[in-house]
Length: 137
Image (cartoon, rainbow, N blue to C red; front, side, top):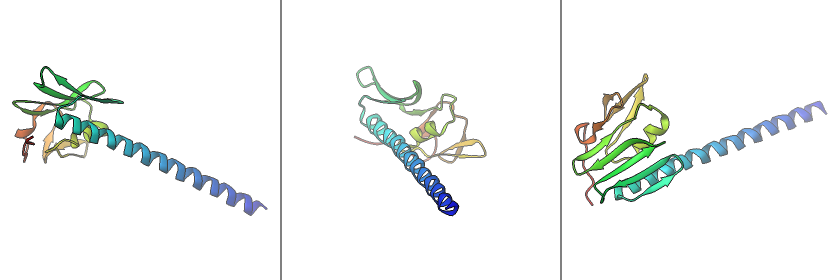
């Protein structure tokens, strides 16, 4: 009888573990979908807002902004595309920025690298940071 109860407890923990795993995967996929949708809006110059992420159009399409928690992490205008972490070196900031064309951010030993170059997160013009081909509409 005790062996059967132990098996049931193990089965219960396995089921809870699987449930948690499924929930985490769904949350991760949802976050990626937000990035995909926000980047699509950013690239095509249309407004977007979901959860903590927003794309704003300034003026008569003079500037397109990508915001995370209200912080301006990327914008583009007729002079180029600009990136910033706004001081927030988070997984979500990195994910949103990595969704943009021509952006590859990775982290090694707490240092962020933008297109292979160490980057402190301050505002930079993307076209000046490694290989980049602007999207033409």
